[in-house]
Image 1: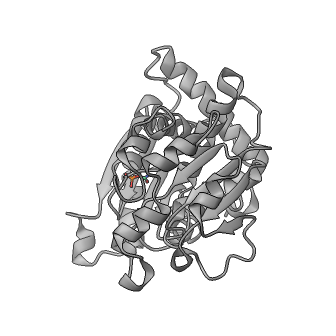
Image 2: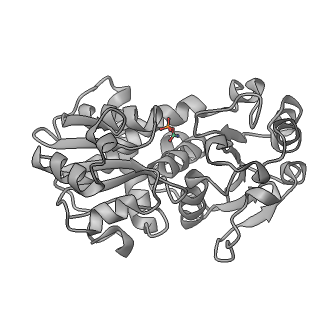
Length: 324
Ligand code: CP
């Protein structure tokens, strides 16, 4: 059984394979071939213990476009509120015939636990675990950057020579972690820009440069700027400058947007705090790829489901951390 648990252990070969298959999936969608028969007879369970709009709906759309059956589980309103464990919940869903489980959980490591515990035999896909990783978000971000750079000629291309600036609440961001690993695996240079209180203590092994001044980062050449959501729900007051201060120093406001040059793009994983980390002008500008990211997410998740559940095996290209 194979899984997609993180990007830290994802090989470059497999990352490119997923992005290339996603290109094929995007092509079928653009040709109005809305539904492929590939996963007929397979069942995908969306097991969401945390709220989600984009990721859950995107996985559901991806599975349905491949003709899989989809069971949506939300912890709210389920027997989790009566104390049912992750193991019992997962085994209950497995008994209903799950071939793949897409899990979002507040606990970092919950997807790996599910994949390696022996509780279930289904493939496991991490849809965001605590502050650890969100691998399909990073894959769709990389897909979006590559598509904007190479257009229809994207297949097989890595991100060598691309400079990406990731701005904001790195401390709580699984999106930032997954992007750091994936983008650098693909050859990009990554610069983190963050308030000193919102960077993890131990990042000595991260292949990144850290700056604390957004204007300094914007003065350099860059191809993409990724604004992170300020995760107020995970935040202790001591971490955070005031919202006004944050917006003034680290927000992508109209003046900073004006300073972007060439074909550089603005990414945000959503949901956005408009007026805090990103202004409405930036979110809605032609440089913004926010809605492209959402659309690309369906293609990327179709590719992940296809590689996980269809005939082609991920075995050889899969990094060791992706296997049990
Ligand atoms: N980007 C992202 O994970 O969004 P949702 O929380 O809406 O799924």
